[in-house]
Length: 527
Image (cartoon, rainbow, N blue to C red; front, side, top):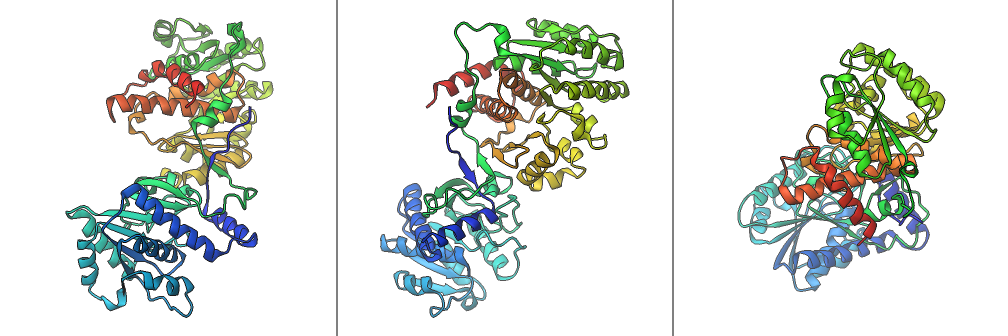
């Protein structure tokens, strides 16, 4: 089964490469601008209806040109349009301005409105504002006249009656690669982005400031399908293409075994959540290797699991337990999946156990999912990524990712896609960077962004469920990258289903478990 073509998320450099390619193949920049402006006008009318009066805020560059074309098309549809220009445009040099100026009934340059009083009056009288001030090529801090203009726009947005703000390509002040947002940026209700979403549209805070995101084709798609794009938006069709198939005559051994190694006296529930999640997504067998203090909870909550009896009971796994687990693993099938880390804790003896287990697993080439304190221990080791078998799956939250990358959380959060892509390539492992709009990055330099930002999942234990889902899919034969995609998507969709029913808070991680089979069924049935 072939995976369907996903929606691509382009970087600034990739968008420029696409435009250059289209220009070489006969679609001029001027024609792309006309297509963008005309398409934006149609999309605006389709999503907002026909406004009475529009104020178009026009920048000096190509984004402003897109806005002028859009404004002209709206005017031809009978909308009263006023164009407010940040800088004057020379009709002798600007063919687009020369062409559309006659269609726009009223225009004004900011230099002729030094106190911005005319702008205030226009904004008070309109029902839609078009933000066509800055496009993808600008990322410097906002200051000067543009800062003053945006301050007036922010005042109007905060005052009744309501006025809709429509951004062309992106909100002025957003970084199209990282999703960073200038403090002066004014959030939009509707963003009409050209050709494809940009990476920044699916990274906070720009994602939240974009409002409803609509893609406007500009004629590039058919001309440049061969331009490589590294990142795509994950969707249900992709997941469906990689879900494990189940034969009517199958038995439990056909669906793989997951070994969950973790737990300590402080975190007795984490390995059990992971084990149950692996079962809920279809794994045939789950074995728990946990300290004896975890047994009563794990045995009561997950009677379907088998156990590796620990060699000692010190409240955490230690070297003796690691030797016993290694012996049991030596008798296991090579394709058995090991989930390392849920609730493991950071006791010194646990570090010794992890060192031994990683050496054994590396030698065996076992498929591994690393989570939680296994990641924290790895981050303290030199050249840690070489301690794991290639193509292991790592599931860090932003704090763990920062430790693995020897940086700080704010740096990771400022460019989630970039950090995940670079790390996966450098380490040779699949990275699942958790958080709003999770990122899945492969060692080959490609990535997927999940279209989910769900605050209900910000609660203890949901990461253990996620790790169990990924391990469960891997045990059923999914390649590491596909297991990460299926596990993360099913987990996120389950969280969304709970949120739709109950709201933004109150989820227990265990609530997700019963929802996982329902999500799988819906995905298999399809639209």
